[in-house]
Length: 397
Image 1 (cartoon, rainbow, N blue to C red):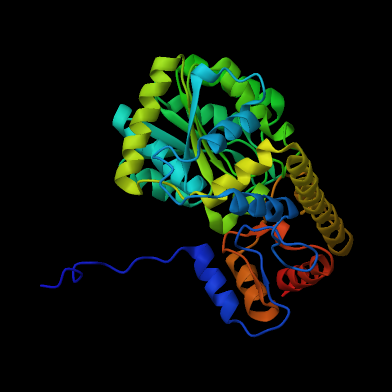
Image 2 (cartoon, one colour):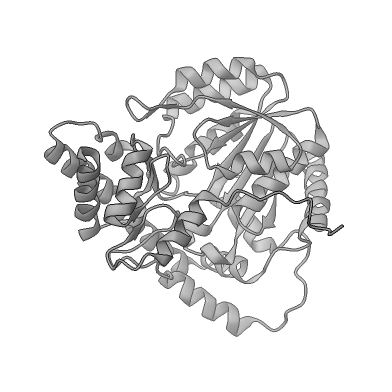
């Protein structure tokens, strides 16, 4: 019997399957609004100037290709914690491990939860980054969902979130988007984050924050408000961080897994366990992207250039949100898409039927997932009008 005969066909990843169809489409004005990458006004995903300059510095200074170590590049780990938690970081309570992107950070932290408490249930928002369910399941953990989003108004639904978490038991983990919720773009308010921290503390629930868009919402520090509130109020916290979006290093796979506990001994124990898990999965993360990001964060002139570029990207996405929602209001004569303007980050979840999404693809060569998630960072300038035209036609026909 063949080793592979018992395998069953696997369902393809819907976003990357969509990208495959997009690439095969010969139409010249096609748009891929599914995959989460930033595109400039020319429709290109650029290499940032800060990244180009840092790459030159790293390559010129590199004298060896020896192994870095199981924890990855230490300067990146340190800078990641400073970027997220701020300069007043209580270093003895925190530790970080470099990972091959944010997805690997989520997987490592899920494996850590499984090692520490195998009967833990991970609570995941109904609308989330789809691989969250796959990753948590692959680690052998149970999961349940909580409501987070009100489709009738495009806002975060804190009351439903609070109600659903009443079903969580002490020690359960709650997976949260730290900012720029994917796929909805609907974030909790600062007050709601304070209230959520009190709920987590009262019920002895541990947050696992996934942060992939810091700087794309309200700003670098503003987008860290949630995690800083939780870190200040709670004894334990887990964090998966991705540098893909805010540094534009998507294919370089740069991320960190961060652990916060009540003290240095518990933190060290957790990170030592993470290292062992990483050793058994991929051994060591790649060095180049990590060195480039760390160089930018440690060099004041390069960091200033990067912050300006990140602000430009953030501003472009905000302007796209405003222009797109206002054009749809003007031409449809109602405010059904007004919520887009007030949301954060790359994505919004449009209230579209599967038929409308298919019409957009078949007639207009505009690609997005069946659930209506649209990457607003993937369209700007003339593309806004192109998508508005196509969307209105598809809704009406």
